[in-house]
Length: 109
Image 1: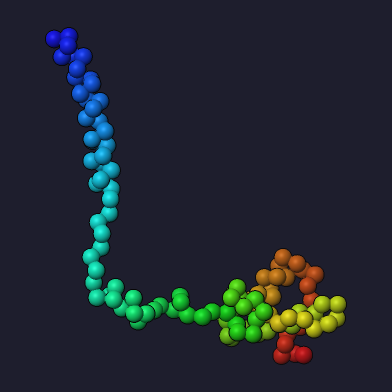
Image 2 (image 1 turned 60 degrees about the horizontal axis):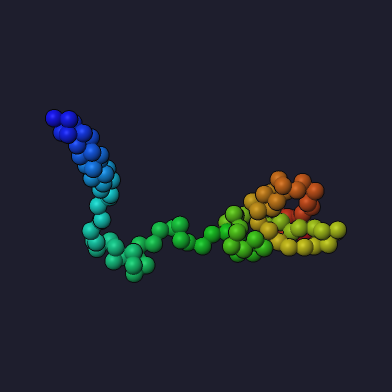
């Protein structure tokens, strides 16, 4: 009987990793089956507007531009000289970090 009591904890310990593996396997998400919507996504059809170009095309910030086509443009004035052109949202962002910047709306030049 002493041997039996001694072996039972070992048997339980050996069974514990198998139980942990079973629990881990239950957390694995099932693989989604392919459907016809997947084919549309691969062809590029049905692209959402998140992939559409954003920003103002004349803004010097280019790909990092946070404005849009309907934004006013601001010309950076550096030491009294006309500098780069930025959309208003980008310009305001720069001014919030550096209030000493000077600019003029391009439509007021």
